[in-house]
Length: 280
Length: 180
Image (cartoon, rainbow over all chains, first blue to last red; front, side):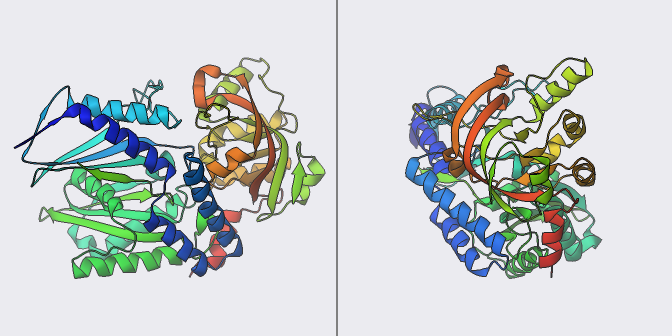
């Protein structure tokens, strides 16, 4: 058994929050650079080059790459041999977020009540997803999620008869409706199966996968590639001004589901694809 | 194309979708909450806190500045949320709006009717845009924090014409051109 003091999470989360906003990862930067070579629109290419220049400036100056530094989505994959002492785990995660948004000069974009809408002024609380896994380590992933992309996500429960064509149609409709509002080129996360809420969790978890990563299940990997081609055929382009690069990748996560259901969720990620992880 | 703000009607009428502009001069920031207050003020028959004659509004809410810096990262927010507030502000003199994303169809009609333009900021280029801001002045609704109305003095702020005074919409034409 391993005992961890919850306060240890504060500096880890604080640094991950700042890093996610200022240092876009190599996997994304390579994907953006490759996309400039294939983008057919001159203006689209100019936009992609500006985004790359922006990411470099953000890293160099340790400034947020985008003003929407999002609501903090935090994943904790906790080894089942871990036991915690210290103050409330949730409180310590939020303290890490609070300090990160303050030290990083990030934007406070969270309201305490969705109807009354008063800013909480410290970007807490975070949205926290905890999972128990095997082992004695804790993997922490921080994904600051902006509203531009988040607002255009969708979920539904299809009929089994809708099948693959129904799934493809649903995803394409979602991306087309989003247009430029989610800041393409996108990373598209799709969750299929489970139950209503499980499918939405899967769709967001799909966004943790690196660009270029294919599902280990052959027919799902095939569907990921088919969707990527069809999404790019929509012609939406960088920031929606028209072009051949609308998505950098599509990731699908599935889960067993009821004989009578086909839950589906689409979670869109913008071109910044912000996330940072550490295992303690 | 370098433009010194404020726009004149003649300048605005020459713009075409896809034109890349570098703006210098003054503009105001305002997002959802500020726009709602503008409309409430107008409905009460009172004067707005800013003079909208030939004004450019940037739909933006920046990050806080680091010590010694003028402004934190700043970029366009999704414009369609402000669609319901556009017509009354055009009537007060608004000539240009900077934001991101598609808008509802009636906005193109308003742009054509009133000779007003919608300009696209590059969503996510916020670090670079901060470098184009020379000064920031809080003008109204400070209690809204990032969403307050600010007067920005900008230099070389790059935008793309999204809707021109002929009612052409870049998002529509671009997609049509590259769709397969």
